[in-house]
Image 1 (cartoon, rainbow, N blue to C red):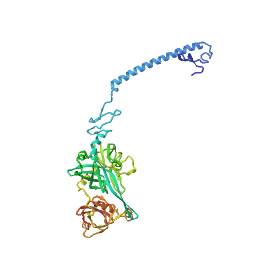
Image 2: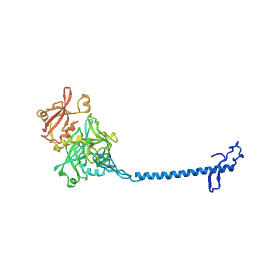
Image 3: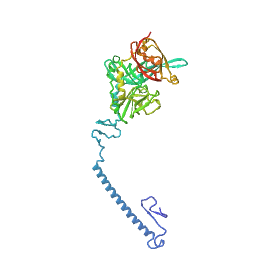
Image 4: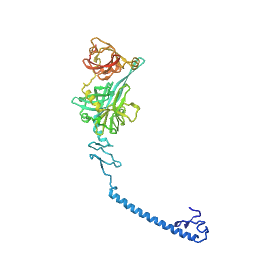
Length: 446
C-alpha cells in the first residue's frame, strides 16, 4: 500500500469496486498538485481506466491458455491410453506375464520358464507341505556333579522333524542330532494331533543330522491318511533374495510358520569346539523348537533343515539351515542303518576296558583331546580284538560324539552282545594325536 491510499466504495459493507485509488503529493510539473492534469479527478480516471484494461486482458489470456491446455491434455490421454487401467507387462524373454498389483490385492506366484515372481500369500503352499512336518518332544535326564555328588533331573526338550520316507514297515523322519541326543524317549506329534514313539536309526554329530523311525503298525489309519512325505529340493539352485519359509515347533508350542529371504549362501560358521560348517543364512525366524524343521522354497520343496543351535540366542533376524543338497547323502546313508531299540537293562554289550573321562580342564592342562581315556584293556576282550590300546581316547561310538563316560553309557543302551559297532579313538603317534577307526564286535558282560 502507498501512503494516503483510499479504497473507493462504501465503507459500510456494501458492494465495492475493488480498485485502489492512490494520490501522490507531487508528480509531473514541478510537483505542483494543482498544475496541468495532476488534479485528483483526472488522475483517478486515468489510473482506473488503464488498470481495468490490463486486468481484462490478463483474464482473457488466462482463459485462452486454460482452454487450449485442457484440449491438449485430453488429446494426449486419448492417444496414449493414460486414462485406461494398467495392463500386464511382458518380460524381455516373453515367457511370463507379471500382474500389476492393485491396492488390497495379493500378488500370486507366477512361474514360467526361468522367471520367478515373489508371492505375498504362501498359505496354499504351506497347506500342501504341513502334513510332512512333525513336532518332537525329547525326554532326557540332566546330571550335574557338586562336591563329589551326582544329581540328576528329568527334563523335556522340543524340536521338529520332516517325514522323508515311508515303507510298509516304518515311517522315516529326519531331524537335528542335538534334538535326539541323550534322549530316553522321543515322542512325535503329527498334523492330526496323534502321537507315536520314535526310535533312532542313526545320527551324524558333525552335520547335526539324525534319522529316526516309527513302526507303521503304531500309526492308526487316520494318521496314515493325514501324513505325507516331503519333497526334496535343490539348495544349490537357491539365489540371494529368494523367498523361503521356515516351518517348525517353535518354542514347543506346536507347528508355526515364519517367512523371509535367503540372506546368504555357503555361510561359514565356526562352533565352540573349533569345527566349521557351511549353511544357508535366512532372516526367517528360527527359534528353539524349530531345530530339525524344514526350510522350504516357494514351490514347497525342502531346501534346508533348520537349526536354532547355530548362532544361538544372541542374534536377531539371522537364522541358519543345513543345505539339503549337502545333507541328502548323509540322510540316505543313515536311513540304511538298522533302527535302534534299547536293550533290556543289564544286557548291553561289553567292550572290556577301564575308562576315565577327560575333562575340559584336564585336556587343557595336559594337552590331550576331550573324550574318554582308556586306562586298561582286558585280555581276550572285544576291545583287545579290535586293536584298542591303553592311552587311546574314545571320541566317537557309532557316529555319536563322546565327551564323557555318561555319554558312552547312554549310547550303549542300544547295543547288545554281538553288535557290530565302529569306535573312533585318538591315538598318540609321533608326538601328535591321530584318529583311528576301530571295528568292534561287542561281547557279553561278565
